[in-house]
Image 1 (cartoon, rainbow, N blue to C red):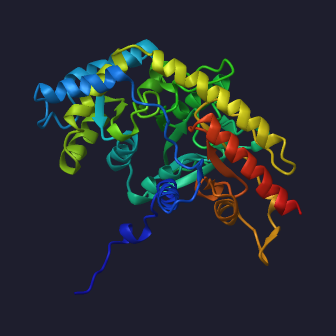
Image 2 (spheres, helix red, strand yellow):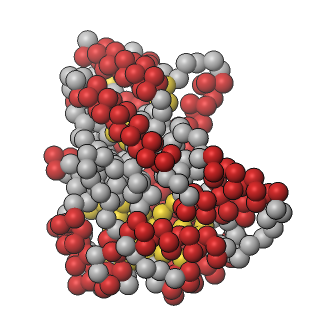
Image 3 (spheres, rainbow, N blue to C red):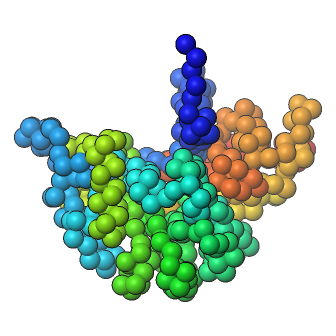
Length: 400
């Protein structure tokens, strides 16, 4: 039999972060003491009341198919959350529940983009954005941000890459991997630009609850009705409620787009897990004490690791305003030689840290910036302390 894979399958790249997580897991299984700064996953437990809601759902026999786009109870809970936290009014018909925000984003791509369409993606960007756009035969077009400006996206950066083929702008604030948030003044300017140029906005707000130093997330859809009518808001319970494995994400936007997404989802995955949907209701409507505790602890870790990195000669790292990542610039070490071989890019640097220091990081090239590494501080302070010591020794060895 001759196996002839599709062009899409041949062109698809596996998730770099998941691949690195698998390497770290394998090394740990081999007994290697690995410090894992790779995967973006809170190390906190899912809140007890959320777990209990899932247990109750099982005991009550809520274990069958649901509506493909999610149960009405969860859609109403999402509507309540969006009104409470973001000042956004949506009806259940404007909302779809999917198997994680990654699934929601792919449903959007399938529903909106065709061959020849261009989608503006600010860089640095989450690895999945560009891959999903390519999977539906559209073209990601990169809008560059500047490290010296804190990786803040500007209207000018977006406007400079708009063409007649541009269909949408994809925003992520706070950003994975930089932690940067789009300043409100620029958010307003980008919204005005989208209206002027008749562009759609996809706003990935997965990290909205994880902000620091007095910064507050603002959804672009909340600025006015004009921009709301052309925006699809995407979010998840994964990060704020430590529910990564429950696989519940959602999107809210114009009813005709949400309906199209639902039709696609009904043919691909059908409904998100019934039990996880009940748990998500409890997460969104229940107490948020666990979230507040988590933010305080993430902030403590952020400040500690940021300070340690910025004291290492040759490394510079911007102060992230949200999420749980640092994005240090390590390019001053490119050209250093290890065992007779020069380190010339972020992939080789990440491999050096893994092999020499047993520290897992993600190459910045996966996020559109080869000068950097991504480090997740969603791990214990003890682990961060050990990892910081190893990183300092590893870069000290490169300096000679």
